[in-house]
Amino acid sequence: MVNRERTVRVNIPKGVRAGQQLRLSGQGMPGLGGGDNGDLYLDVDFRAHPLFRVDGRNLSLELPVAPWEAALGATVKTPTPAGPVDLKIPPHSNSGRRLRLKGRGMPGKPAGDLLVTLKIALPPATADSSRRLYEQMARDMAFNPRQSLGV
Image 1 (cartoon, rainbow, N blue to C red):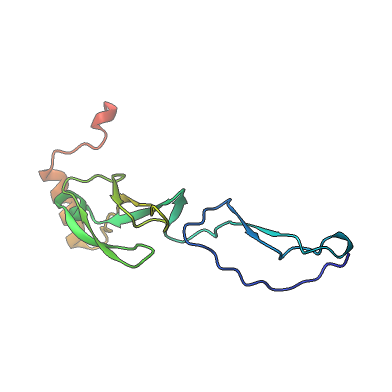
Image 2: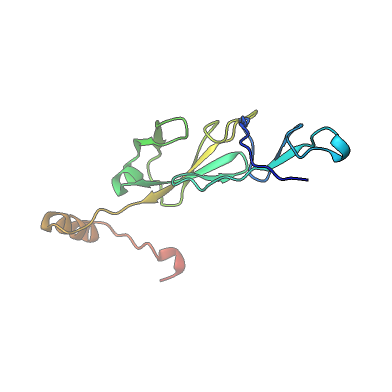
């Protein structure tokens, strides 16, 4: 039996999941005694994507939002595998809040969802004007983010 190297073109069906096997009929090694070729099995795995994480049919994304977008509500551009969409951020949203974009996850029947986790990104206080804004917020807002911890 001689191993030989060759290239096989494979169409990966939509909705295939990590860990799933694809069978390529007749693409394996020749059978014993000149029999028909066997089957070739491919184990599917995904390379990590820089933005999206796969969880079954769903995808997850951490979306940075400005404090005022989270506090006041906003509509922000959000990346999806099919291209950017407008996502409505409800007012009074906290970091860690999860929003669901139905049908924007892994393709298939049914398509998965895109689960967007809000992550509040603070602007730097490097300029005097931005530092003054933070100081004014500290004076004007009676806010203790650790109150639920009893401190």
